[in-house]
Length: 160
Image 1 (tube, rainbow, N blue to C red):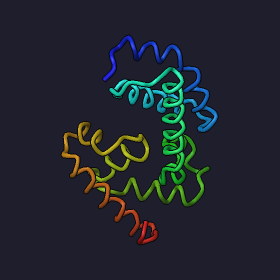
Image 2: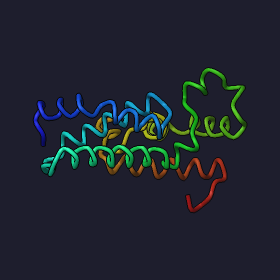
Image 3: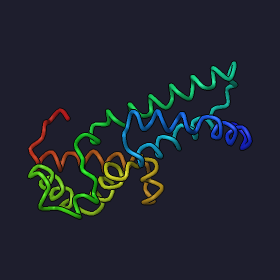
């Protein structure tokens, strides 16, 4: 784990580069800030030394690009609509989005909460477990069951 001085130095030196890379890939300020935090958290937690400043820079670039790609290829990212947009203009939503929202809102609250936190707010199962005071494996179970309920209601693929 790196000390605060090292992390602050890296942020000062590489913040602009990381943000630019994120904006190029994500074209979204909020996602850029999320990935920015993720990249520098990984940096702070990395204990292995870098061979040179060039190696450090290359590592940050690779981690940033990979984090952006992971976010972009997320299955539900391409199939979700921001909740703010749903609440502001429900009539303007495409019928399939309205149907998904109605199906999610019709879930029992214990399922609806984990679906919302995971797919709309982007929390991981361990984070949801801490937020809701549940075991991580319980969160995974709730997500699996809620996906199955949604699949049944929406008539989705059995493989998904």
